[in-house]
Image 1 (cartoon, rainbow, N blue to C red):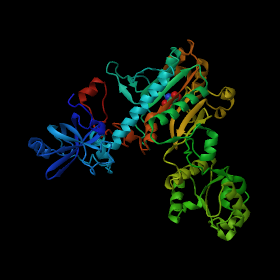
Image 2: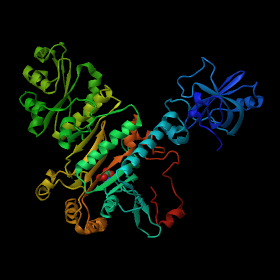
Image 3: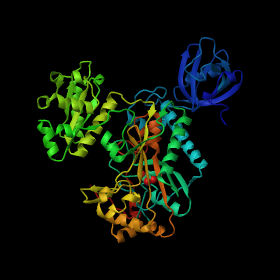
Length: 597
Ligand code: ASP
């Protein structure tokens, strides 16, 4: 080894010992006589002192080094002179008195400061990712990710799971996105697909009798780049045989509660995990991935609204719509400008409009409310009683503002869901140190795709229908609930899974409902259907998005902050500059020709 110890591990106990360190120059301070170098390696930073009276040669070398030079230093660990300790630094009680130094490599001036957590444009960070990762915050994120994944592996190993790798070059597996394709050189015109997840492979492993499988699996989905997605991402993927839904839910709950405790990151977890049905989540929070760190629940006001003289309400209801609202507490003090922004949010979410009713502040209760305290464009069409009933239903008091949407039921719900999220975000209603995990269950098995004119799987085609809903498959498919569960946390879906179909005939039936002919299913899923004929055990599983989970654990805003080499928001790898053109010969070998634009 070029070094005997790590910079960051030195402390008072090492005083008097001789060490050789190697790392990067975090900072150099020249105090005329003495030169101080903060030397950094992965474990941290320690101060190194170069005294010209001790060694002119060392002092001379130290005067040449610049930030990010790679150096090797030997010397004795000494206690810092009283009054010069740095309590902010774990090594702050000591310093190394250098008597030997060697420059291992030089560095150009980096395009941004490594030793500061300053805001740097993301494209620059991604281009120089290897420098960005030298920064403390990013290093901590990668360490946290490592510790989290290691914990998962050990946890599952201790419970009889075995880690099995599955191939990356396979055949299309439907998870609702486009596949990435890999052309075959050997078989002209044929393609492998990169797995959207190891779904069918893990099911085959259950047929193979593995009983408990897991994998830290790469998944590939060619989706339109929107929000915070990556073309490739990592899942904790697992599957179990001979289990019930509760077994999986409990296992994951135990995993995450113990994970967060073990990581010691100062976050609290809601225990036990909350449970919501899909219908409940949509009804109360307007989304299937609610942030449960704050209340602000949606309530249905249709029965009150229908009695008013407000034509917007009445016509929406007459057309089969609903009137729903949430209450923005008075202490949030929404300014007129903010209300305008809320209106924008509502419009973007697809609502025709947003009605606001502010209840003037009397400091008293709702019974003190009078009509001249009520401010709203609809005020003259509402009676005091009607305003009071709506306020009561939304848990409002004088001083609060009611936000109301009258629209098609799904539009009203999702719009209020968006407004709720926006208010929560802007007014910081959510405790940043809390992880509010919840399971959302009882999703519909199928969703009608109006554009394609056929049923789509809500989860994926391998999800089992709820046994009691089975007869509805023939009569009312929209009413069939799936044995599907999502794990959500703080407004994000962090995972999802289901009990699976393990009987070929039922699987064929679901494929038929999804519009595949028997010949189609045989061609695409023949391997699975056939496997089910050879004693497939009942099984189920789940997959957790590791990027998203670590993002939440790290308190970061995007998954790019917890991925070593992410693509940017346009799916471009800025470090390698991929995708990129390839040579004509390479294309020819693959039997491909690129059409000129
Ligand atoms: N393969 C599923 C997914 O990627 C997870 C599962 O059902 O286990 O969402």
